[in-house]
Image (cartoon, rainbow, N blue to C red):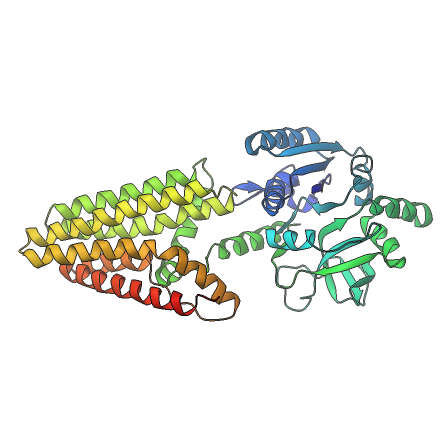
Length: 443
């Protein structure tokens, strides 16, 4: 499906952040890049961008984005960009003769909204607008500035910023047929109204405009600096994954998110972060081998730092839309090597400080339990996601817990105790996962 993005306006309320609103940065990506990559992730493969104010700078950026990400982007210049947004939409009339998505360059939302909207049934002469019914609870919306919508039995009966009776907000995301162009033109002729909302009102009067409930989906109109900060906060909060363990969720993520926000300022890749995390673990393990407490304590700190940094690669990948199967696999491989070196290092430390043969056995059980804990994670995490959808509680012991145990235990100079706890915890957890997955195999 094709997508039309309106990026023609000036955006006076964000001028303090840059001289081109679509190019204002939000966590390492410009607003328009974030919109395009969100749509691309949702399955859209061809983009038409309406440019206007500061067009040269914007079009140069879009050309680079198209080349870097291998995305088909066509720019359409609106020489009337200072007028209402309906005229910007009309500039694409001759290029879009099939159903398409229409969105704005400053509206940020999650890809799932778009995926569901594209699956919505639509007649040849209709338009479907994604709407937010949470008019009393969505703190991300500026109620004084947002376009309001009145919907009756899924059909739009009113739309505008100044209407007093409404039950939904306009998210700025549309599933359109080419009928939208004729509606805008008719509204201009009949009412001298050049707004997009005016065109929707024309279709609504004909019973051809419907609302699509985004439910609790995330969206925000980044129209000023306050909204920019809200969007940043919400995107960072969204970095928490359903499968995060307790240490990741409550200890690591708050720290890794701050590190990630700093790293986003640099041209650094997720795989480079994975490698950095691995090297920190390797250095920590090397210190364990030295067999003295000072080295053990420093190694413990490096281990926990590695665990925190290990979350940054995925965070950067998600925020910059650079997730890949290879990246996930590469990170997993390095984690397994790091786990082995760290636990082997602790085993050597215990042997150097008076440990005997049982230490080797416990060390082996800790290493194999750790490996199997990671091996069983894929199926177990898949089950967890399905259980969460059914509203059931989740329980997970993973790498974050293991690394934290190493950190605390090594600081307390209880290396042998760490090996015993990890050996017991991981192997018991693996058995528990087998039982849980067997019992819940029908989900």
